[in-house]
Amino acid sequence: MKKKIVPFLAAGVLIIVVLLFMVLSNIIEKYTPSKERQDLSEYYDLSSDEDVAIIFNHEVIDSKGRMINGTVYLDYNLVHDYINERFYWDANENKLLYTTATDLITVAAESDSYNVTKDTRSLGHTIVKADASTAYIAVDFVKMYSDFTYVTYEEPNRILITNNWGDYETAPLKKSTEIRYQGGIKSLILADLEKGTEVTVLEPDETWTKVLTTDGIIGYVKSKTLGSTTTQTAASDYVPEEFSHIRKDFKINMAWHQVTNADANTTIASVLQNTKGINVISPTWFYLNDNNGNIANLASSSYVDYCHQNGIEVWALVSNLENKEVDTTEVLTYTSKRENLINNLISAAIQYNLDGINVDFESLSHDVGDGYIQFIRELSLKCANNGIVLSVDNYVPTEYTAFYNRAEQAVFADYIVIMAYDEHYSGSEEAGSVASIGFVKEGVTNTLKEVPAEQIILGMPFYARVWMETPIASEENSTDSTEAADKTEAPAEDGSTDSYTLFELSTYATSMSEIQNLISANAATPVWDDAAGQYYVQYENGGITYKIWVEDALSLEEKLKVMQSNNLAGGSFWKLGMESSSVWDTIIKYIN
Figure 1 (cartoon, rainbow, N blue to C red):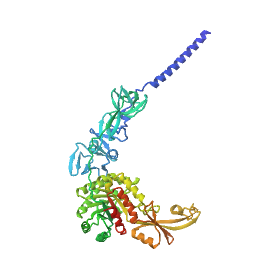
Figure 2: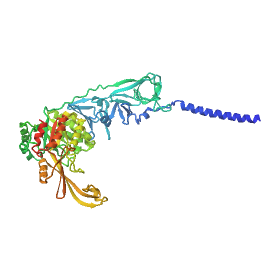
Figure 3: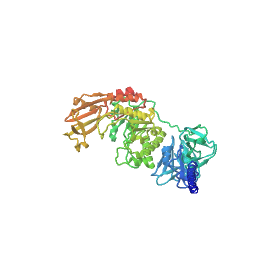
């Protein structure tokens, strides 16, 4: 019997030993650190020997640089979006431009020289490499005009770029260890680190801490291998440029004078006779007239002379709206065409002895944003060189007009004008004020986030809109009407929604005096609207409902108070001839 039991016991012991061995092997496998290493070229996702990994502000980013003849080149989009937005790449003419406070720097693709205005200089190697999709700029050239530090390494190629200044934490290694791709002993090893190596602590944790090595490797080390952290400070050695502006020693009291033909210039004496306190006038004299940057010109020397004799400066307006055949985007995104436009404007300003230029470029698309800002930069240099004031008209800030970049405009232009009107306009889906006080206040508040108060001129309206609701049908219980989807509907007088009237909404802009005539002729009673900061009037005539948010001396005074309380540079008014005579007494109470 014992002989039969022994084999079974031996087999059982063997099974137990095998199981213990397997368990032990699993335990050893689980707790034994992996020795497998990560190829750094794969880690940085480098596909060729020319590729350069970019570690930007302690983070490996997707954008790749290029290593050419020992020089690192950065993608233009990276430079523009994250390092220095003032670099401008003209992909149409393969030119890189940079505008300083006093000079325009120009670089042709594949050249080792660059022009600082009319002075030619050399960098010693190619500055810009261009391909079909973008341009690459030598990092040492970018550094000449930008606030950042960089250091490069090879095998594999990588560059560490920092422009985020401030405090950060470092710690020494208490013993030699590995830095791994992720936290955990099974993660791939990126590099071996010696005892005493200083690393930047990115994300501290109890077990594994995310760190950055001095040569640009980001990964994880065991937290217990780190010594005490020390606070370091990243400080910039960059000295920013100082930009100067032409500042008037008086509050700006400006009005736009719409001039549509040369004969209109002869009326300047009578136009000014009806005003008080104006010290700047902006006649609509210039507009883009073709895709090469040529302008139509309605300027008059006698007009300027008359204004100067009466102590009034002339800041002639240039617009992009009159000639519908002109492609503003094309003019502004070709350096040669943009330069031609600027030269034409400066030539006219000198010829007619203008005091300033007022830029009024509207309805631009997002695609031309950089070209438009470059136009303002370049124009500002030539204006400054000739003592010409540069002012730029802007919509009130909104998300879809952010590309107008008022902050950058303010660096170069002398004054930024807020066109604080057209809150409701021809084409609006509903009737409303041209410039309610809330709209004006919000426009000023948001502009002040980008532009200093001493550079802001508040644009205010001399006009209002007459809104007309013309009934076109009445239907009972017709909420399913397909026609109703395309028309504006109004509820019944009792407030119910079972019955409604379809109407066409139309509008036209008119003068202050005409508004008063309409109110009188229709025996209407205006009611003050606190929310709008103006009178509101509604009446019916011939079955049509008329709605008007009145602009007059009282509504204008509310806007002038906003200008005054925010210490703005002054006000401007669109447009001369639409105001009532009483507004000037109100205006000079706030601008004198």
